[in-house]
Length: 179
Image 1 (cartoon, helix red, strand yellow):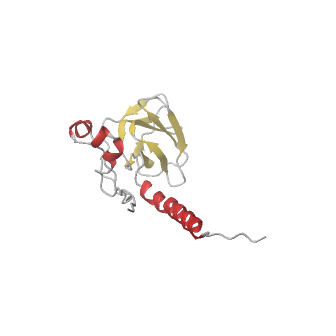
Image 2 (image 1 turned 30 degrees about the vertical axis):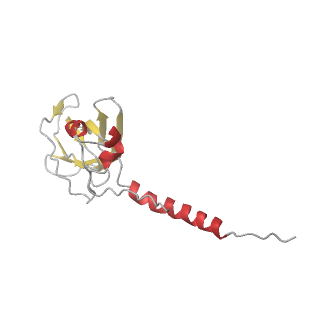
Image 3 (image 1 turned 120 degrees about the vertical axis):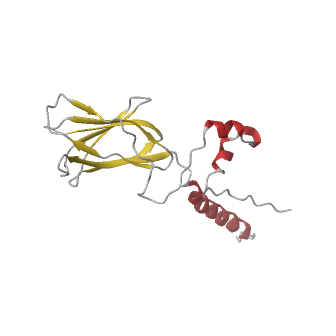
């Protein structure tokens, strides 16, 4: 028994579906809501401290994540949801040091370095300076759209996805129509 039919349309539909999946993934990559917190833990002389315990705590939820510094004294937390965090570093024989209110925005890499002071373990040093917002680790682009912009912009239907189109580097897929 021989089956006759035109399978060209089915092949085209499958090829179009595969192409859509592959092309759609590239434009979605830029629309993430995470960043990274990284830095180095050193002592007063500038020598790195490998194996120091670094804790990242979300100030809104009190959820904490812990890591240890590598052999070069560096640490990294990634991916981290945007928000306000406290970062603490400690090592045996040194005073605990804390950087509170570290704000992480979209695709930002915040560098929080520590200089631990020798002393009793029961003492805590709290640093009150602001972390600089300059990000030099990569070339990714992120933007925060504030409440004022959200309320004042004429958005069609108040759809949050239209806000993403205001950010540089966001590509909107074109719908194909045939008449």
